[in-house]
Length: 299
Image 1 (cartoon, helix red, strand yellow):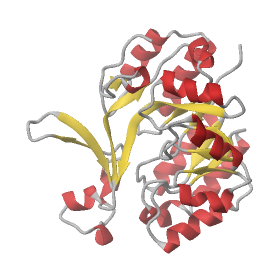
Image 2: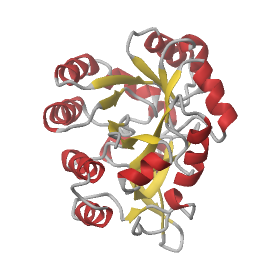
Image 3: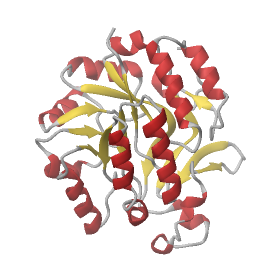
Image 4: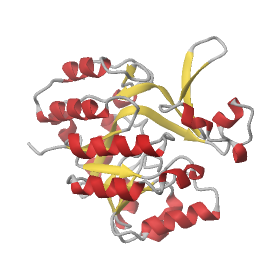
């Protein structure tokens, strides 16, 4: 049976430099993850804080045998941000494109499509492949069956399933964290740093609803797609993506690797994940073609 690879996707949250360094050093030294995404994808204002740390992190990851992918902003809003994307696209490493305006700067060279790109059918996937896409991570709301249909029509590409983490749902021109603290977006004081997994918000009826992360909206629950490897391969999935959170991601990676290697079944993996200090309950509705907030169920 072919071996399904594991990816650590880009960090969505604003972590201080020392936390970034410690987190990725552990990932480099203690996990069997094959590919690691680095870079800011949510808010360009955070980049001056994280950019000085990435070279050291990249060096440590590559020394640990990891393939590093440079992730780019999903909603660039300024000339400076578009210039930063163009500079990343000129790098010799593989780049993740999260906004279609980055395509001209990268076209013809290998890249990964992130879940922020609207890849909802085979024609779009083939278009991106013609321009250099080697891995396609479809939007998070697509079911395994739907992704399998697209993958079946595009066997030349590697399809990656978003398998763990709060689901990235939307990006806004406004900063929710700034508004919460009575600040303007331009003078946000980077209050999003106070919530390393995002901030859960409730409805007026005190029902759990969504989570906010600066300009980003995420699910408040933690998506956990746990399928046996044979099922994933049958649907054309060659890679799973784990989204970084402020929990024991080394253990999360170990649980998924055990599942993919056949030494742990889906129910056992789900139980082990539920024992970790996660920011929300486990759900997997989208993976099964149901509402995304449906509680995790046997695969």
